[in-house]
Image (tube, rainbow, N blue to C red; front, side, top):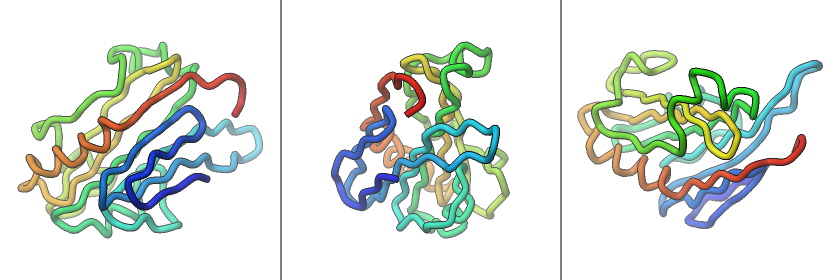
Length: 161
């Protein structure tokens, strides 16, 4: 696992992110269960990331205040890149305030909203998932999410790294 808490570029497994000031970010890969293949996950938030959290931010999003943002980038591997879900959008997408919806959350939390985009880049399929602490603050919080998303870089990964 690689992590950083303040404004340094971090890079692991073909993913690089430069968290803005006040953000914490980490890139990790879960230990696979027997017969399972796992891929890198990047988490970033405007709050301290708890050690125990799910890939889509369970354990984090419950802690978000109205001015906080969580962003997750989940790698689904090369086999996903050409499937219909991932193939339609190439490159890392930005977010707009209108894409955030309370029904986009894995679990509804009053006032919060989420956005999810599937895309492919460098021969890999990804899900970009973001949760904002307040739907009513979506314009400013989307800008904060996009500041982090704009720092993301993806490279091809050879083999099983």
